Length: 407
Ligand code: CTP
Image 1 (cartoon, protein in one colour):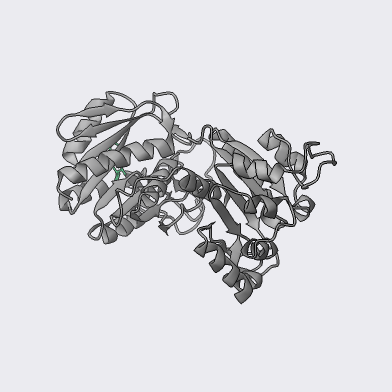
Image 2: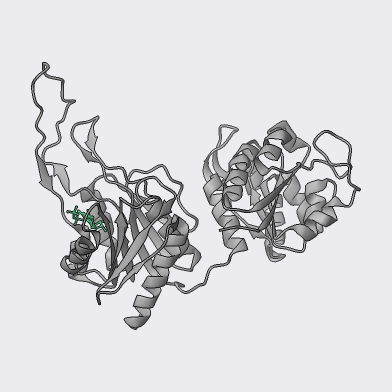
């Protein structure tokens, strides 16, 4: 999705410099051309060789030619790079570099290039909480914002110092998503819409240590939430247990069981213009949760689990029908027929049909192959694409449906 985009990464000397290795890898995977510039202190945290291997380009550490990792070209490289880039990203941006940027200083390859740019600049502050909250840093950030610099705010959490607070560089997926949103602006056709998305599996406890679950990774639902937020929606994401970072500007509600997901979704559905049930909600749950760990009986004995059915959230949403309701269907056989049945029975506006038989579709993959199934009998098969791209197509269809419904 970033094919041909030229991205300059300026790495400063902060502990989270290591996260930028993954960012470079993710950007390259999406087809971008990436060049990495490092301050001297950044090289204390990550070796230039790591970034040059990941970016498949030389890493520039100095304005002057001469050292092992630097080219022998003349010293106008910061001007050339400033002209070359479609976006420059300084991450982690230390308090020192932010202060220099605010004052237009050009004392190393990162700050000099930032001054010679003809493209958008993204700055991701990352430092200890007291340095971040210091009035001097906040004033410098405000200066950059006024100048049109895109600021990716730090996460709140455990810091290298042992303190807890704002200052963590967001996870690589979030940094990458932010860069993409600056480079490839999205339409704002969901501006102000309240969208509720469910994602991931549910875990139904058997005893204190075991559960019945499924293989859903949550990636499709998270991609929908991320892209909807980028298109201006106010997004709430109800997530089962997954190992994914929260997309930017999305409110996340974590749940574990089908019953908790039911309550979290139904209590928010009335206030939502659009509900998308991408979660793989358990259809059955153990009727009784053992209070203590079930012990192994002697070999040859059977353990029978009694399961009772859960409430079908999508069906309940369809019965109440406050806004647009979209469901997912994962099928292994007679796919279209089953999806059309589901659409009718659950009174949805659209079903996104996944066939587990399609190569590149299903659990844990980054791609998906889906068919959109509509109420009027239309079906729209989409080719294999990245889950973010599929999310964009699904949201395009939802926008068209809401226009049709006069919303
Ligand atoms: N779903 C739900 N609540 C449940 C089970 C499923 O809201 N208790 C939703 C899912 O989020 C999805 C859709 O229903 O959007 C389809 O789920 P799926 O499991 O494919 O369909 P089922 O109706 O459960 O039918 P079956 O498992 O027999 O295919």
